[in-house]
Image (tube, one colour):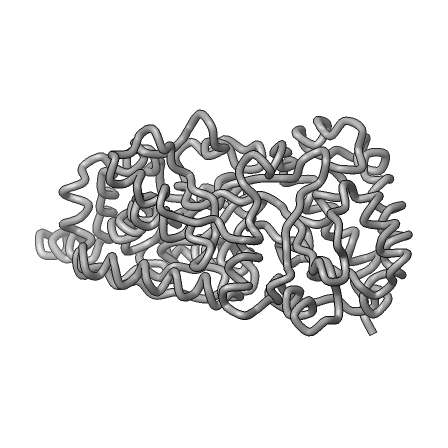
Length: 399
């Protein structure tokens, strides 16, 4: 009996190791050394991919962490993978260590207890984050509560080729009227691509007299009435689009390529510096410029989150912390690199670190912060989930 008891003890599953404390940074960096972090992130942009490769080189140099970019076309694929692992009982050393995420995907993972944390506000570089002036503690109205860390700010802009569309268009109604007068010269990425769904959100926000209703979850009682202006707008707009709305570019870069090829004159972007970066990279003509709508445009933060079953949580925290560093933030804001907005508070930086940002030239097609106008809040994720599904039913079948 004694031998059986010993054997049973040997065969019993080992207790799970406690997750490392994000506040003990020395322990985090010590454990991170030698780890490989599989970062699932959108892979549809060469400039973004190059930036992630640079991040990988820097965290290897400073911390001995290997960063592998797993290129996604849809962040929901990563969410599904983690959920499948949880359902299969694969609670240790999952396939994904970090995800570029926000909005509905974050809300879904948080609700299903698929995230490690809270960790974000314990990272050393959180001290530099602008928690007062940036929307970094809520994500599409959902409280973040330290379960993801911010690394870029975005705001909707419209990129136009001034050789053919000389003046900015101040509203969605103005875009409709221009598109009707210039058929085939506008399109947007096909949902569920995030830029395609962003166009739908931006249209609804601009068309509503009071968009505050979108801050609360969509309900069966209010959904039809609130979204009615959007469907009326799209019914009028769709026949005027490139290829009469029977086909759409798959991604943002594909949309910009249509401008470069002279097929369209107007595109939506979620990066105020994208046009300048694209001109610098010979992806857009030098006549490209940027505008925002008169009522303002939607803005949000990009975050990274760590799945609950990552086997490289320490390495993932090292990468997340580096993404919030002044060095990485200044590089991301450089219009010739990415042109992303920073999450940092300039007043919290040292003189040397602030000089990194002061030395940047915004570029010919990038609006100044003052010219970007008002930032409109993201709707609650429930609105976009239903709108994207309805869009596919109404307009998504292409021949």
